[in-house]
Amino acid sequence: MDYTYPVPKPEPVVYDEIDKAVIAPLIIELVNRGALNYSGFEDGARLPKIHVCSIVCANQNLDPKDVSGLYDEIEAEKAACEALHPCEYTTLASFKTALGGVMTYLSVDKWIADLKIQFKVTTWTAMTEWCAANYSQEPE
Image 1 (cartoon, helix red, strand yellow):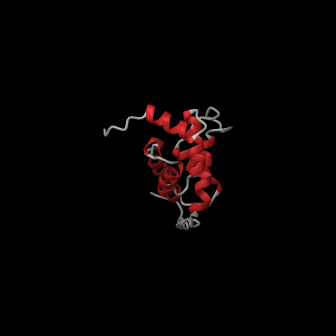
Image 2 (cartoon, rainbow, N blue to C red):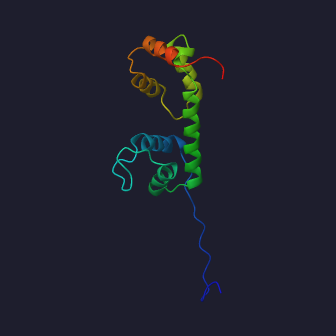
């Protein structure tokens, strides 16, 4: 027996249309910030995809599938950016152009600034020298 009394069918959930230009920065900020003041996580620990999407959906009336899909798009964009190495470009402008070709949601200037921090350099020349010394350009 399913139910003792007749139960009306629930109304289907109607979600808002996802505005990727608005939601992508929220996802990026949550990923970058990490688990700051979230119970069950150490401060600064990386939040798993399900938690990032759940936090966004808790504050917006969005379909979880749409938010998860956008998260995947951002991750794919990040992977495409990581595949580009500064030592493969002769000028900063050409590197920025290449990054701009694969970026939709991430910021070219922030990406380059973060690379400089990661490589512990301050100039384009130092970045390309560091990259050339530390990345093999041999085909794998």
